Length: 121
Image (cartoon, rainbow, N blue to C red; front, side, top):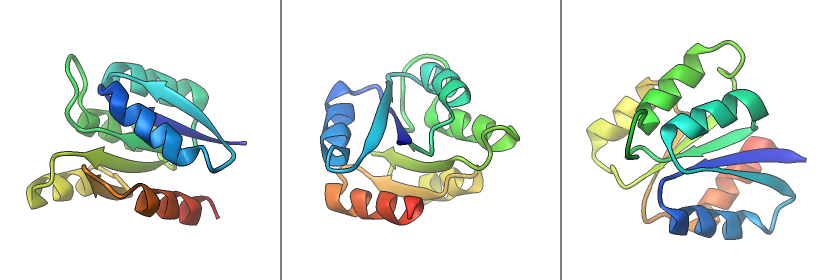
């Protein structure tokens, strides 16, 4: 079974994404902070990470992406930034740090599902 890690400080967003993904056969993991998401990604080795940018506390999504993409154990993990930070500069920064795709909130659940299906095909 494929693993997808959702890292977002907003529980409503995590639930929406989980409901969207429930039509697939995925193991869904949740993290509510960058620090928790990083640890979970390193331990669980998910196939895809859906990563918010703005999170309170220590690491933000950009930090987590940079760390994961620079680690040989996690560098091949597919990371989709899923964020309200929709400025072109933010998108360019995320992609430059190694994100594989960038979705802006509010996002289309069906577009997200299509992307995940293509990645895992």
